[in-house]
Length: 95
Image (cartoon, rainbow, N blue to C red; front, top):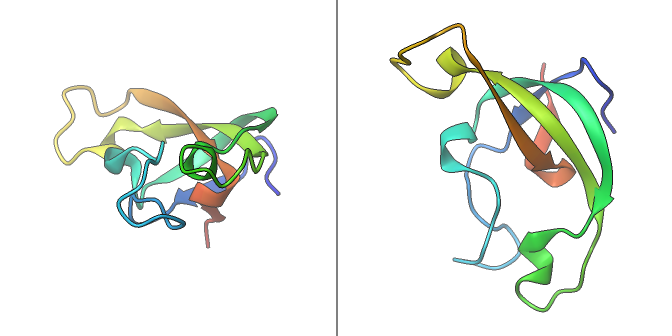
């Protein structure tokens, strides 16, 4: 769904949408943040499903680049970037 260079937004809430209180790999510090697709890693097991017996449910996995200033209110180095691997269902296209 996304290509390198696309601007995306991470899902607003860092929680498992399939299992209440369940495992997720969406870091809370990135929830709701705007980033840029760096690359596609291919499709991989979706841990939010697999950790709770819902099967592997492979999804595309992306490297997403976020500006430190997008993730934290007062970053020590605001021009630094952080790369986070995120599954497709954690992302939406930025408007």
